[in-house]
Length: 190
Image 1 (cartoon, rainbow, N blue to C red):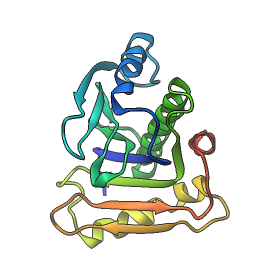
Image 2: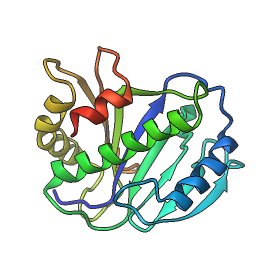
Image 3: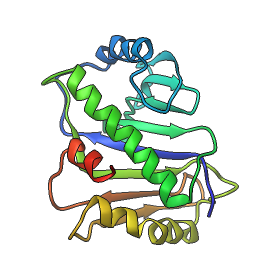
C-alpha cells in the first residue's frame, strides 16, 4: 500500500469554550508568522456554515488543516495533498506529528478554551487508487502501523477499529485506554 493522501484527526477533549470562528485570527497569525514547520501556509477559508463540515480551514501547499466537525465530533484534521517521503509508517508519523504540533499551538493560542486528546487518533486514506475501501486495506494499515503505534503508546495495546465499507474512505481509529495529552504524543514522535 502506497497512498500519499493521508488524513489524521485528533479530537477535542470536550465541547470547547472556544468558538470555531476563534480559529480564524489564530490561523491568519500562523500564516503571517510561518508557524507551521514544513508547510507553506496560503489562506484561511470559513466553512463554519456547513453542518458537520470542515469548519475553519487553514490551506497550505502541502496539506490542509481544518477544525473538522464530521460525525458531530470536533477535532483538528490534517489532510495531506502532496507526495511525502518515506514508507507508509513514516508518512503517517509525519501527518500525526504535524497535526499534534498544530493542536499544541492552538491550545497555546486559545488558552483554556480548547484541549485536544492524544489517546484517540483517526487515520483515513483519501486515495482510492492506492487504498480501496476494503478489508484488505484496513489489515494493511493496521499491520504497517504496528511500530508507530508502539512508539506512540509504549507498553500498551491500543484498540484499533476500522471502517471500509466500499463507500467511505478506509479509516482506522486508534484508542489508548490511558489518557495522554497531545504535547506528550508530540514528544513521543521526536
